[in-house]
Length: 125
Image (cartoon, rainbow, N blue to C red; front, side, top):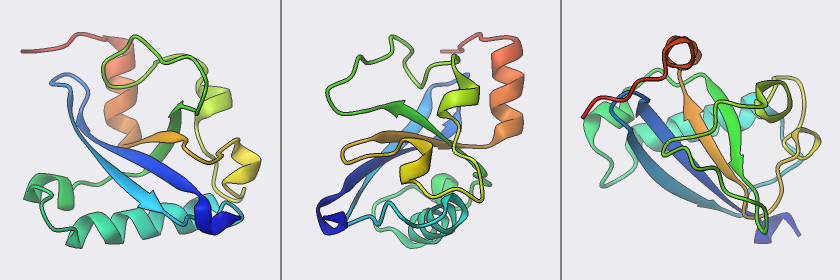
């Protein structure tokens, strides 16, 4: 069944500038630990064709569920600032235990940037 799992990861470079790129991963094993998947995505992003260099070298460290298949989507353009306790993936748990399922969309970002933006959620054009 895990060979059918598709996850979309939104690489978030800047919340203020709404600067992100989405990358699709197929055949993801939901029984792997969060930190294993984070390492895999970081390695993949660093070598992925067509991804601009700033996205390849960014210091991502946190994943959060943005959207799940057949669920309501957020109105936020990058990701919701709500429900961090429930939606941020925690090291030591497997993806499935964190609520990740087939066709889940995840944000991958730098926690310090997110906390700064959350304290003052202003976007810049």
